[in-house]
Image (cartoon, rainbow, N blue to C red; front, side, top):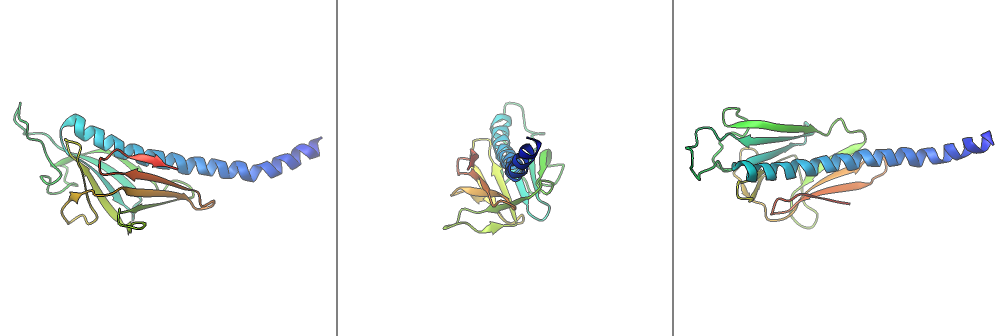
Length: 179
């Protein structure tokens, strides 16, 4: 009986370990999707532009919102993606949250632009949400923003099993997790 339990445990163990790794990868993809949704909701709710910055070299997603100080009470003017000169300047923006994917075991993360057929892998990307729910993107931090015209995709792949999870950010900005 003990031998039989040992054999069953030995055969079930690899699939259990793989399932746990897949759960970590899936949780990472859900967190990334949540970051884009948070940014969009915050932009609409606060009435100011909110940016999600992806930097592949650091493996970090960073969410920053434009400061709304100095806007006259009752004014309908809000900060836009273009009115912030430097999104990393703490006098113009403030940090909302950060998420670093480098600590996720066995997860490879890449961001692909919407170009057909499969999108080019981008080392950096700024996705900016406006107070009116529009979505803008740029792949060079020094360049200007353009409207997002297709679904940006963030792939999170289990490097051991090859199981991919994708986060899609369509032009309307409502991120979703695709399996």
